[in-house]
Image (cartoon, rainbow, N blue to C red; front, side):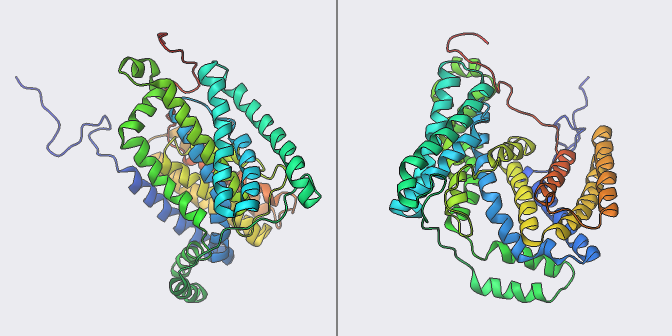
Length: 421
């Protein structure tokens, strides 16, 4: 007697016969939800800066270093190497960007930043891949070494030029471009103050006004990374090194080579993230330790994005938006963001309940109650707390919204050629 198979049209994917939505569609749905939450919070609180074009423009600029650092972490960790050293590679990139831009313009600065960051990635590869050093220890050493090298080079090169060993002389920035006709039309819609429509127009206007070539390149690197890692033979081999390097080696994959390439690309992206702090209009020239922990934030965005390009883009966007909001409007807007976070957590709780993830739903509900209590009990945030509150709110939302994380199986493990597992 034949066993009954799945119903016609059903997808036997181990999820009760239900076909899961594509990842890109899930991302679009969450973006729509976030937009609806921001529009609702802006309307109920009267804080229009939540969806203003200035906030969106600042958020895009501030998200770029985090996005590039997260992409660097993605390439390294998909190959099985934990890259805590992203911060140090970004620091090397800031110095390289200023040095290259001073002598050759912004594109030369970007290239120099990528090269200096890649050198940091190469050093991390030598330590972890060739000599089997613990990945965390090596990453911390890279961070300390990157900071020390940047200080030494700044004193050697920049002090004679600027008179200050902690700062470079002024360097040329990237030009910016705007879709003028579209920005003007969106500006009229934004100023009309129509619910939802003006909110959408404000955010879109910020994304098409004053955009630099580096921003376009960084955003383009997200789909490029996806195609390279998930749609090419090279990407399949690289990811196999992070899942089971022994099996990959038995199939002829050159594991050491792929890990080295992944870390060179990782360091190059992190260096470009450092360049974004130096070469974007509105940013400072090279300053000592100007990364401000963005390498670690990029790593967090990558983890919350579940080691996927689309997910880390969302994480970087949240961090950048929160930072841009406090820069645009200060404490009052952050309190409005708390209210919006409560609404978003309510949506997340409903989703987790539908999926029968009781613990995640409980965490989300508890977080929502805590944030609402803060919003209700505080009239004005202290200026000392404002720069950190936005990131704290973002972390709470990301933690409650995160799916079941699935890192590469062999991440952080020491691999020796020819030695079984």
